[in-house]
Length: 169
Length: 280
Ligand SMILES: Cc1cc2nc3c(=O)[nH]c(=O)nc-3n(C[C@H](O)[C@H](O)[C@H](O)COP(=O)(O)OP(=O)(O)OC[C@H]3O[C@@H](n4cnc5c(N)ncnc54)[C@H](O)[C@@H]3O)c2cc1C
Ligand code: FES
Ligand code: FES
Image 1 (tube, chains in turn cyan, green):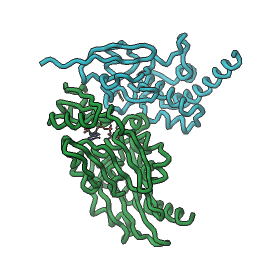
Image 2: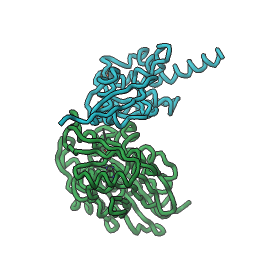
Image 3: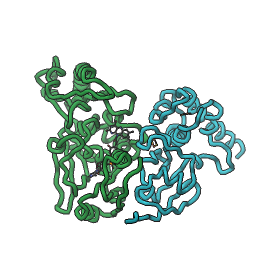
Image 4: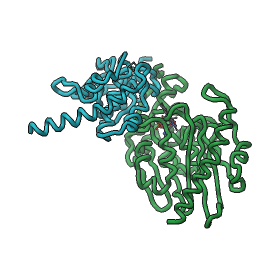
């Protein structure tokens, strides 16, 4: 018996991806294998590590705990979608670069998406709030200190860019 | 770590959903998937059909009236946690939910799903039991209300029939002269608790007329113990009803110690809350 396939239209970042997948295809695998967006990483595949975190309608969720077929209609933002349209690094990406917020980089996509959404909700986090923001993501390299610094720096960069844009206007 | 094949159905009415479940004896409901998808990926469960209820109408509510808080099957933990009205009506909801997993999991996992998943290591089945709440379920045979005391049959086993969909959980409001508290110890914040204890007390004047403790992770089903007559040593009264066990996360002795430490602490805090509410 061959497995039933579903035609799924995914809205990923600025584009639309039309894929044909079995119902059991995890969104994480669909993004990586069917859409070729390998920025989303897969660590544990049971919700614990956070490497696969993407934004679903702007809200961070584990892509390894969602079936691609169930994501039809939602707007999905992966780490590739965080970069500005002119390829400038987003504030969070820039901050990770400046503060050495990554070493091997395996966990980084999940941190970046989580923090991008977290700063939308709370643009001026305290250090304590920055820690809380990343509490659901695991990193085996950095020891987290530089990731916390990156969160705070990203908030700063966002403000700097906003005031620069304000002056230009 | 990939699920076995299954058929996927996405009904858009409750009638259609209950009919699909009746027709497919090997089907399971998919809500937030935050417990079910890991079980499928580890192949600890292999239903032949998943009935995705995320597109059913009118189940996303967190509504509050004088009697308490009603949480629809599609309300995410995060929505219940941030509802100010729910927190005012029954403060224990937010106190416990802040300890349910991480924010990212709470963005998708549902509170009703967590209750019917019936994990004795989960906070919300215990909260529902401690508060004497209930769950409303619907099938092709109609709707019925299951009291929390009748809801939990064993480890990860509720008394819902296979073809019943839980549509709403009801958490009674905290009475005016009542207080609640919750505390748990976990390896890392957001992990399942090694031990969690909640308290609910009622006062008349300065006299405690009712004191009950609910426990997480130290039994097969949520356990609530009445400690009204054991205010001096609530842990001693509770321990005979509990079965703290050894596992890779903690020893039975350590869990017993946590019960001894947390029980009087949450009880005292709940009484303090009730006294505070008494005097305003
Ligand atoms: C990393 C991680 C950490 C976690 N930590 C905690 C924690 O500390 N505490 C805690 O309590 N939980 C924790 N969880 C689990 C989380 O709370 C889940 O959201 C919850 O247990 C299940 O809700 P769901 O909507 O995701 O249900 P699903 O995963 O979709 O379903 C779970 C089960 O319930 C059934 N079901 C769901 N909804 C209904 C319904 N309306 N009617 C009938 N049957 C239904 C399903 O068929 C399935 O058997 C954690 C999860 C992860 C991945
Ligand atoms: S891969 Fe999804 S949380 Fe680890
Ligand atoms: S940078 Fe290596 S796991 Fe985080």
